[in-house]
Image (tube, rainbow, N blue to C red; front, top):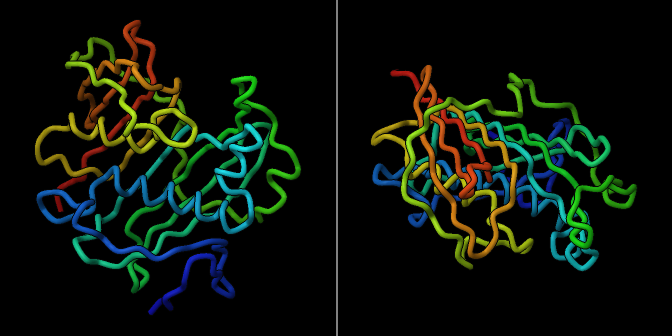
Length: 254
């Protein structure tokens, strides 16, 4: 049995740099009592932010310096969504820094070591003063120890979505959607997109590509299309320029 480790701990002989324990709460479950898909993404994001806190490079510290790490893409594979009350551990580690980009893996397990989900992600270092990505400084990356990448399939980060999408009513960005960067939080895009999945659609895989940051007062137009066993939800502005592109893969019947 995997030992219960508190936030910030590291297993000896393990390649995992940072981990924290969590438990499925009622506010995060769906009608079947399972952790919602967007809540899985939020748990991964939280782990990343806790890791930054642990090494002294918190998001609030970076904000004072007019910088931030912003996520560019997610590739999340879900083997099993944990159920109400179930304890789980989330682990994360960076495996590459290159120019403006940082690559980071995640692993979600139950307390017996069963893999619940794993993920790859790409982030970029952002300068709020210039409004552009910027090369990460040595100070920005030095506290993070690089580990080996998780052995998973790497699909293209850029998502090519089908034509002739179905248009739904717009969603308006309100203050509750925002995070410390004053943009819509990346988990909110997933939450909105998942609302447009067909009823009973069990997700086994999720890819997200972020292209444009939605801000307070923006209108997000939702476009959907199912093709070749995947369900696409594109969140775009009035000119059809995507804020985020999501691609959900349906779980096969057991």
